[in-house]
Structures are given as structure tokens and as C-alpha cells.
Figure 1 (cartoon, rainbow, N blue to C red):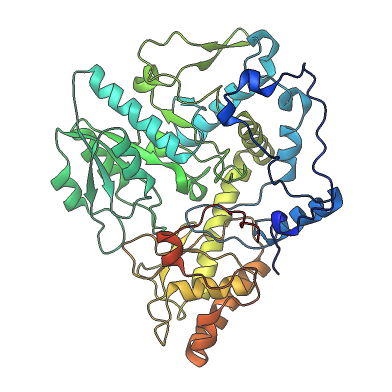
Figure 2 (cartoon, rainbow, N blue to C red; figure 1 turned 90 degrees about the horizontal axis):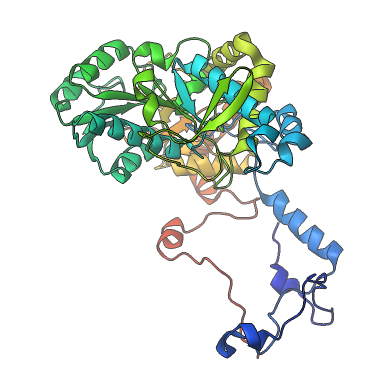
Length: 484
């Protein structure tokens, strides 16, 4: 299962690529470019026939793993199935062929869709207004913290610290630091929840916000959330909701009702839009009414059945995204919400929680569980109990060998040899049973034949890599070998 590079497959006997006519008058290159910038010979592009090139890229594509091939239990990332109906809606010519800067009066349908999506998301999370601009969850975090920063500054209150739990997603402290805040870590209690004692000790007049995920990163609901909100608001700070784990709560409870002031959502997690390979994602951020003036500009406004973009927002933190956000993702998300309805979204969350607890129960006695049951939509186990020195990495590689994508490992950092599993609601019981059986088989192999397990995977395009060397000395491009 290997594939040579197109350069390596190239044959000099074939002609080079045939390019279409440029459609503009040809100029002498020397008249528009410095002599030193001109090539003395044609670039060494691969020379292959079109069918050969098509098959080459098809074989490369077949080596990639995706949700369309098998189970993708990537904890924290909510790798749900992306319904085809979403793709049909996003490909409608009236959406797909829009120019993002065409006049508002010719794009009323798109603006209405954005307005409807904003109202739906606000209803789901209990916020008053929402910006659809941010292009990912971390981007939404940054935009939300910038609004919190602007809110405090508008009151002449220059706060310098953001509190972040020690189990938080790594983007939380990164986003806070990027906004210029000092990041203060809040410790977890033995049950994986925020330590109220440590939180109280670190709250003060310098605190701008506490960033929190609920359920938290170990898959446990923060049962003291109302007390946490009271403590945060008592010092004049804001409570920020990281929406990465909303898949456990849709239709059941709302962050706004828990006391959160700012919420970001991951449309590419909870609302079934695709995870991009670096993009496009979507991370809308919602706020309570007192923070509405600081929303990114423009916002979509509705009046007498028509829609417009509002740029006249003097307290806005400004535009945070080119155009108005990743519009194709917005179409997909609203399609999902309309198809599911309120009852369907609630059932999705109930099924996600059921699936996680089912897998957790199936692995009881195989892996360690630092927190007692039940979990919410995901759980964190520890592989430190595997025999013969086997680690979470060995478990992950063994799952790859058996056709499953590996769960998140070594995160969160508060759990040694962490294995973080999120099955989502879109997987069948048969798939979950097969995954449980694979983990049990690997645990038995760790006991009976650890050397074999340590060599896996052996049937994939890539086996065990020297990950330390790859991280320290990455080879990021292929260099054409010098001719003999």
C-alpha cells in the first residue's frame, strides 16, 4: 500500500502539460520581469497521462481515513456523520453561485438564512445575539474574549486576567494570551470538576472572565455551575462558554440559563458541518444583550420582512472575518437544525450520552476510569493499567490496525495515559460493539504478545513512525534529486 510521487512516476518521453490559451495578449517576459527572475529552462513538472494522474490521486485519496470509511471516536472533536441533505442544500445555485459582495437587495435569501440561523442558535444556547463570522471554534473564542475585553474597557475597568481550568482545551489559554490577558490556571477537584476552593482563591478585581466547558473535558457535568456563575459575577467578571461539548446538551439545557455571558459554538462539531483540513469551519459566538454593542461588524438586521447588513456599530470590535463568515457551513448547519427540529436535537444529545455510557460500560475492567459513572457525551479513560509497559500510544496504533481511527490520547493532561473517546449519536450499536471488542482484543494482546502490539500497525500505508524525530526534524517538501 504505497504510492510513488508523481515526480517519481514521470516519464520524459511524454509531452509536458498542455495549457489553455491565456486569453490576453502575450508579452515578452523580459519586459515585465527582472532578468534574474526568469527561468532558463521549463520547470520539472511531472509528465503523466490524464488517466494516470487521475488514478494516482484516487489511490492517494483512498489512503486517507475519514468518517465515510469507519468509526471516528475522536474525543473532544465530535466527528459526527455529515448528512448528504446538507450538501444538497449548500450546492443549490442560489447559494453556491452567490458573490459575497453583491448588493444586499439581490441576496435577501442568503441574509434571511443567516438571520434565521442566528435566531435558532440563540434559542438553542440562550443568548440574545450571535455573530456568524468566526471561522472556527478558537476564532470564536478569540472574538468572544475581545468582546469581553471591550465591554470592560467601555466601563473604564481594565482587567488583566482570564481564568482557565487545568483540563481545558488548549485553545482556551492560547486565545486568552492572544488577546493580551494573563492566563491563570484553575485546578480540578478529584472528581474532575472545577475546584471551587481554588476558583475562589483566584477570582478578584483583575479577573476579566472564566472560560469553561460544560460538560467539561473529562466528560463530567459541572454540577456547581450556578454557584460558579454567582462567584464569577460577584467580582464583576464574565463567564465564557466553550461550546465544544454542546453535543451533550442540545434541547436539554442552555448555557445562557446556567449563567454564561458569552458562548461560542462549533458548527463543524455539534451541527454536522464538515471538519475542514484547516478550514472551512464555523465558530459563531453569541452574547447577552448588554454585550451586543461589541459584536463584530456587520451584523444582519431584519426590518419589515427585509434584511440588511449593519455597519454602523461604533463600539464593535470590528470585522473578524473576510466577507461574512464561511457561508456554505451556515447553510449546512441550518439545514441540519430544520431537518432535526427541537425534539430531534434533544434526541441527538440523549443518544450521544447513551452511546458514550454504553462504550464506557463495555470497557469497564479493561481500562482505568479516573471519574465515576455516568459520563456525558464522552469519557476519559487511562491506559496506564495495560500490562507489559504498553501505553495509550500502543492502544491507539492497535486500533488503527483494526480499522478504527484512534481516539484522542494524552489529553486532557490531568489524566495519565489518557484515552478520550466520543462515539457521538450517529453510530450504530453494531459499530460500538465492534469498537469495544477491538479494545478488548488489544488489551489481551498486550498481555499475550506485547511485541506484536508494539509493532502495529503493519497493514497500513504508514507503520510506526519515529514521532520524536518527525517533530524535531520535519521534512516538509520533496526535493528533486540532482541528475547523475
